[in-house]
Amino acid sequence: MTVLTPRRYVSRLGICGAFLLLLILLSPGIGTESATCGWWDAWRAKLGWTITAEELTGRPFADLDDDGVISEDERAGFVDTARTIFDLRFPRTLLALQVGISLALCGATFQILFRNPLATPYTLGIASGGSLGAIIAIRTGWGIVILGVSTLSIAAFVGAILVVATVFLIARGSRRLTSNELLLAGVTMGLFCSAMMMLVTAVSNERETFSMVRWMMGSLDPVTTLQGTTLLPLVLPAWIVLILSARAMNQYRLGDELAQTRGVGVARLQAVCVLVCTLAMAGVVAKCGPIGFVGLVVPHMIVLIFGSDCRILLPASAMAGGAFLILCDWISQLVMRVAGWATVRQLGSATLPIGVITAIVGVPTFLILLKTRRR
Image (cartoon, rainbow, N blue to C red; front, side, top):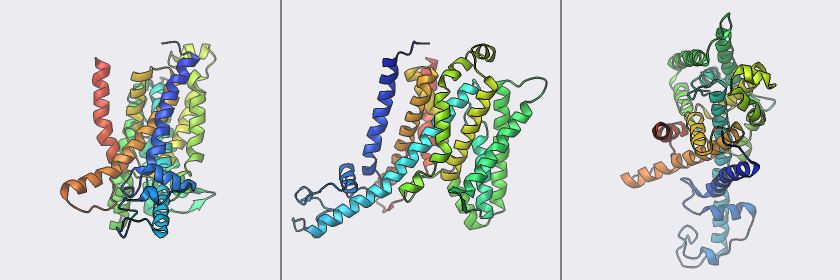
């Protein structure tokens, strides 16, 4: 393992942070509703900076009467439109950032804890359990909010916890199961939860079925910035705990016995990390539905670029996961505009589900990573 000096640590995280910050700054200018203005106009309108009539001259969406002169009403209308575009786009970016960080960070953590490069919250059945709990909540109409937490999130968390509890209950016995056996148990529970989701869908009416199917595709559709930040109470503990556990995870990768001799409580580390990851995944699944491949692809990409030291792997995976999902969200909004242009049809502001985009982007990316690692 390469020695991680403070200079190397700061430079590598700085690269990831700078790229992520660039995407956040550009985000108000990307989307189906952003054809009227760019990202700079959206930021200035939101921050209250002056946009003069002279710089809007000749712009078709500003000069509404096409007389070559920007009136005060036209300028004010352009500013209002730019502010509206910011309010529509930026919350999606904030939500994509939170979800991407959580998925990538939890994926990297499970790959370390189970010492298996295919271990993610999805392959271990945690996301499927959360999805089943959320589907049952949708079917029964549990849509109330208790102390700022929706019953959908509570149901998703209960479903995820039950899957984790079942897997670890199976693991108890005279012989401790290997990480691969635990992984197989998680995959089996995930398949069972998927079957139960189909059962719940089959006994639902058309409206409920459409809502469930649309939800299972994954979505990033908040209306306000406040809605986009409601994930923080569920995902922030996971971010803090996992990042602070990086040194312990480095020792854990060397083996349980060696880690214990170096002062690492292996059982406590596993329990705490799995608990906070389950809480974060329950929040993500309840808010956005199942979004796959982020937790699988991003950590492998970071390992190839920066190495496997957990002190750099975990925070870099988190930032790269946020950037990856922001880019996928852009693609989900722009692809329908391109399809409308290619087919000469008016597709409006339709967007593809984010889960479809992550699969389309994630599968070939992962195959390329496998090919690169093999070489």
